[in-house]
Image (cartoon, rainbow, N blue to C red; front, side, top):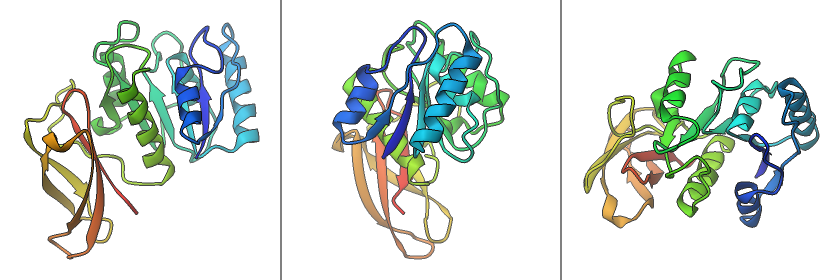
Amino acid sequence: MKILYLHGWRSVPGGVKPGWLRSRGHDVCNPLLDADDLALAVRQAEAAYREHCPDVVVGASRGGVIAQSLDCGETPRVLLCPAWKRWQPLRPLTGRVLILHSPQDEVVPWGDSAELIEQWGLSPDVLISVGDDHRLGDEASLEVLQWACGVLAAGEQIPVADAEWSGRPRAASAAAEASYICDSCGEEIVIPVDVSEGESQVLVEDCPVCCRANTIHLHIGDDGGIFSSVES
């Protein structure tokens, strides 16, 4: 998978997250972005985008603002704790996007991302609770980042959460449910989930509507939220 990774303010290329993605075999372009001039940083990112032709764009903190500001057509984006209230994005937030954010973020409040998706009319399911600080450099957060990139790059359905949106992270009990969209008939199907089986699960379920088999990938976040995607 080809990934354009846009670093945060006063950060430099070669950080933990792009390095981890490279170690997993991904082709990561991680350009140096100007720390003082946002418009210049966006132009630098767009030049890297045109040269690299990525499958997905990832932006962290200020890099998330730059990712939102990119003229990148239909290329999906993963925003990590986007600092959009400190730096004004140059474009609206459109297209296929997932936002990863920690409710314990001490730099960019979780509520900023909740406000961002409400502002642009996005589904609350695009906001995923992960990690316990702003860096999102722990192993679990990195795994979710890779998963999010893969879901978007593959053109899969945006994950559907198993609980009603309440403006805060969603939790699951030991015996929980998740839902998925059948890849064949398009119906939303609710399935039971045993969270004790681990944070990443793969299930094969026959759709009760059309009887076609679906391979369902589940991720259970640190807060117990369950997110699903269907393998095409």
